[in-house]
Length: 226
Image 1 (cartoon, one colour):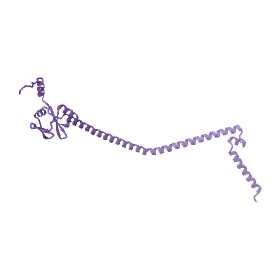
Image 2 (spheres, one colour):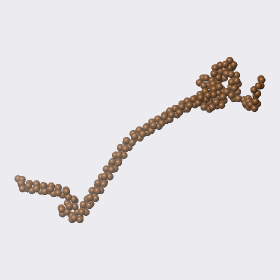
Image 3 (tube, one colour):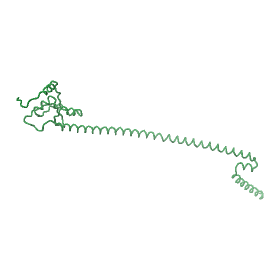
Image 4 (spheres, helix red, strand yellow):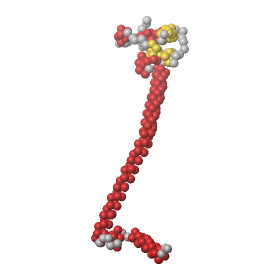
């Protein structure tokens, strides 16, 4: 038969142990050792210092492990994400370089067109300001044949201009299908800009030039009869 008094003692002892455990849990290791009679005050203080040192070492070790694990995870994650980023960056650079080359080509093409337009305007201005071909046809005009490319062309000019064309003093230029006559100095300026505008330019003979220079020193009287 169960003893009621024994059961009561056991419950009282369990409650007392539980209360003691709660009371001990709120105290330091040193106080627990001293109150339990397991160590003197100095021994308990030393034991407490050793316990704190062990706890710090354990915490530091766990902290290092967590740090290394975090670094490893970050490294693995970074290496995985960096590969597609590097490929994307290379592709972006290639597209940028291709665009830069294309823009450079377009700019060069625009500049060439603008330059050609400016040269054309300069040549037309030189012709307009220095054209010596007379407008219309006169009764005393004579034909002058010349070669333009593979074709033979003909214009009608005064006899004096025929001589000037033959000696190279006048030059025929092609002004968009119309043939104009300019002096050799103007023709040189046109040829410097674009020689394709020059149709025919005869080189004067040295003998003819010497004769012209020789006769320039003689003054012809106004009342001279020929």
